[in-house]
Length: 466
Image 1 (tube, rainbow, N blue to C red):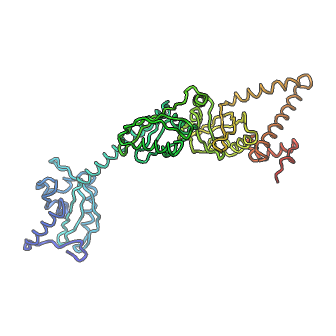
Image 2 (cartoon, helix red, strand yellow):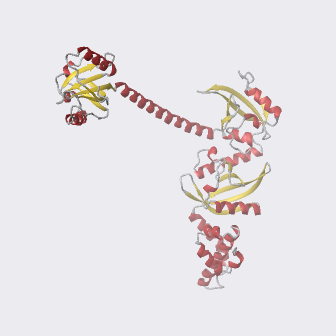
């Protein structure tokens, strides 16, 4: 070998023992070694006996290497041969390893990764090859595994979607509990209403936490921890005030045991509370219960449809502000007016859906005290623009008619327009608590235009916050 290790001297015929050693090294270190003359003719082919390559490549010897290479590989190797031809006997060859594909007249197809060594004495080029068949098989196996994984993920998403539909449409109160931790993994809407009275999300909470007291917690835990579920039915007093009969069975999933609990309330199904709950569920108006900070606690199916939500879980814990057309402005006006008067009627705004649509709505609200917390019960009803304009015209028709005969048509129209404009501005200023920016946005006016109209109607002094 030369000092830099890049080439070696050609072995002479007299050094036969050394040649045998070199041949043995190449046979063991590579899958295939080819010796090429300067013109590209194959002088020798040394095969590793443990390689999967065909055991006899004698028909390659004496032929140009292009005769056993694919066209793209011929072009790649031509650059290496050209580089080799310009090197002196003491020169080095710094060509990086290269992948070449073989295909000969016998139908043999091979893919090898070659390193190149130039023999300095007679410009012989050694191609030290490693078989890529195992690498190709590994890559194909990875591709097949990836395809299987994508198919399984797609199937799983479809199953999750179907399960979500079944769960949200089910009329049965069913709770899925992790058998080891007793935490709720999922529950149907009737089960959520039975456990909390408000239909709040229960996922992740301990099943024991919904019992009325410690004694009921222990009874429920003992029942759920029963290894064989010998006692498959129990009556439990819930924290919500209801008494539920729970039947359970354990099923094994891919990872854990899950206890499937079926809940039946002992309350009369025709009770007033149940009737009201059913009315809220089937109401065409979108109903939602919101905390004082704007966080939604629960909603009925009509609200889910209005906001294009898939399930109650998508609503619970989220803020309603992002769905209001004017965002924080709408929420501030609605919450302040409701807190001041305990109710709000016919507040016109828009609702933003998950897909970016804006739907005109009329909102009503009332305050509720639930477990010591102040909450807002909001109801939204679709109000298409053309309907709203017509409805407003009908409401004003009677008052306008009283002016007929007392003034000309032109004066009636002028005075009525100014009165309505002044009333609207005063109402907006009052609803926003003198917040001019919010009032201008509510009236769809620029802030400058609002100032002009405030001065016109003598309202600037009343609302000046500077």
